[in-house]
Image (cartoon, rainbow, N blue to C red):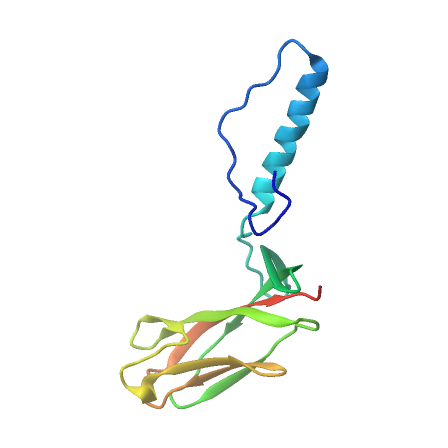
Length: 160
């Protein structure tokens, strides 16, 4: 297995020859097999999205001096926001070096479901999303339908 994480792959071969005549060789092959399986399983995105508690994503970033940083994820649920209004959601992230992704969805009173941020052909119908120093901010355009409910998902890089 390649020790360079940039070239590592989560491909797991589908067949393997296990020695049947030598217990020592079988042990070595079983150990290699287990390591290959563990590396393949651990190099995938973890599909755990939690509210009120951060969860490890399984994603590894090599953005600072080729140093491994994992990302964490947290979900924030929110209620109604009127057209032309905004909502500030205090976030509970104490230490981070950068945000990796910031996205969400909402249900409107049309009714329909929209991604956040939402870009409309009518600028005043946009839904903006940004993260400030202490809040997740959702700004709803004055021509946008009212938001009934939604969720925002933030993923950030942990300290190296």
